[in-house]
Amino acid sequence: MGLSPEIALNRGACGSKAAFRKEAYMKRKVWSFEARLDAVRARQRGLSCEEVGRLTGMSREMICRYVMMHRRGGVSALRPKMGAPKPGPEKRSV
Image (cartoon, rainbow, N blue to C red; front, side, top):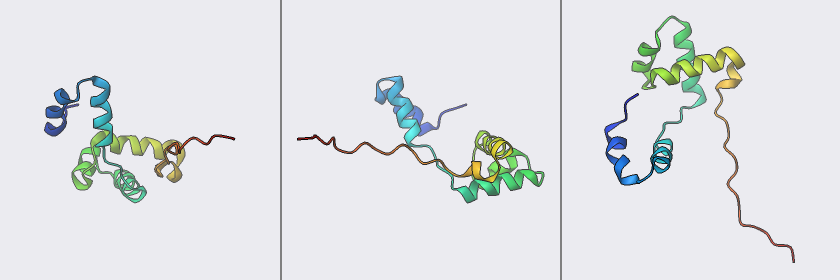
């Protein structure tokens, strides 16, 4: 899997591999539930993952992942998961 030119150029500026992974993670595209479902339905109609990718802008890997999620958990598995809440300021008991 190749890196986008923008990410590849920034890799050296990040310093560490962990910083690079975090930067790449922050730039990833989050697809809506409707977009995920449309991709799965297109795949079920007989289009290849590559064809669906060209139509939607999703990567082949993401489309195949969404199809697998749908097979295992149905439509509800395609809903984006909510991340863990960000920790708020610590409260001290007096």
